[in-house]
Image (cartoon, rainbow over all chains, first blue to last red; front, side):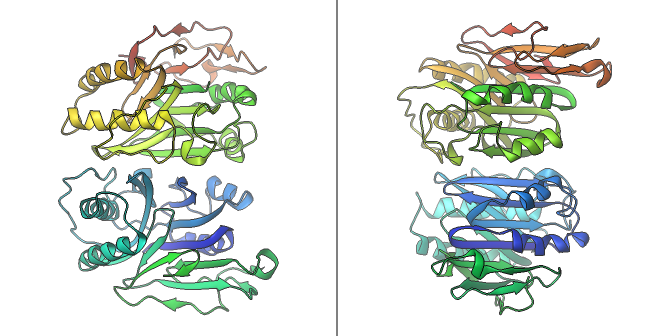
Length: 250
Length: 250
């Protein structure tokens, strides 16, 4: 199984404390990693088929952190599809003049949707097929970009159809908001004023967010497993979809 | 004006000698750079709105070169669109289950094509509009991915329509081949056996390709200006389109 990490914040925020927590688990998830940072409408997408522990790209990101309001990261243990760049999450497509970024944890066995629209998988994973189907169905449902609550409503109709086909924990963002769907294992928390120090669960690393934030800052973090030992993480119910915007659940 | 660099090779090849030649010119092209490397069907796309001289990403690429058969790089001097990540070339879209990468040098003044299809610009450059129009028209011309000579024929009908609107030097690749269209300034050369040492024009750097290659290797390099002082570069005619495949002009 793969590991997901999402971040949604109301101000450009450094995600590397959480990414370090994720990379610690890369030892057993060694079939590549990827991370996408939105900067306004633009995206920086780094993918590598090396593990997040060995990759020079991951090392660069640790050294030169990128601040972003919406981040989606994924470390991969291959279940379907061979280990190749085109099979490495997150995946990206353009719809309605916005980039969309998607990462999936789970298995959609034998999911072969009819893809008659403008979105076709480049690799051979069930995850990319599911993303292309989501984009196709969103494009069918709305002629142009709808308001965010509308989008959440449409995703709330589409995602259960994927959830019904297997395990479907996923993260999706268009740079305006971040959607997370829980199936078997997904947790979230919000950090806001008063900030305090917290410690990674899998690594001897502590950060005092009070030193790094202003009272207005608000950050939501979503992950396959709680990344910190001393914070309250909330588990997603099976089939639960949440939109995060400006660092808060909507 | 911006600077383009393309590479097409018959074996995964390190482009960093040429990229160094390009980055040397980044002093006066300081509004961002980008470089895309195909690895089979997958793409690594690095974009930065720092110049190729200052960017930590460019420094990483110098340190850990990525070998690829198709590379497109661009350093930008903004003429249209503000300096933002979403305006940084190369641009990428998916069509027929393949990623397509595009970079443009020039100006298409007032080019506002009807984009009714599945490709919309995310940023506000004439270049991305031209790319979206090209993708839309390719998708209209062929129901699924055609043979490469067919693609070249269709591009040979489409690109003159862009060339007619202004200055249109461009590079396009889907990982199988690389197309280059010359308008005002574009040069190419082929390196093959017997390889020899060559020296960058703008920097005191020499590489002896004979040490780094096998007799079977073949590489085509396309650039806005000749990058080396001691090799024969061929200028594109205005309106000339060339497909490069396996390191050779087709």
